Length: 153
Image (cartoon, helix red, strand yellow):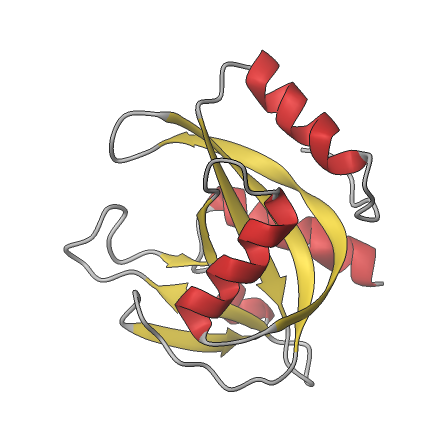
């Protein structure tokens, strides 16, 4: 896990180059989005889906030729109906094996959105989670949230 760092033009190619060197074959981006009360947006995966019944950050795959930040903006819009207004910092990554068996790296960023209204398309529930609710996520997401909490102080 890398400590939170501002998102700049030089950071993104360095992240993907490191992932390539580590044998990563699929990139995913995740967003830590908060409401006015500082609660984090979590999405719930349907039980019959890959990693079903998991509470997670808004996240999704990076398309070929797409930058990490462009993918983040697109995925947040697709999954929540929200518009990302700024990407504030890089919060680190975690690796896992995708449903298709590909070694995947999820790059996570703190992002702001234009509103707190959520329109779900792929998940069956959402929650603006306080610290207690955030513990329902995977250990990997909890580490990302810990980095976000440390950065937010």
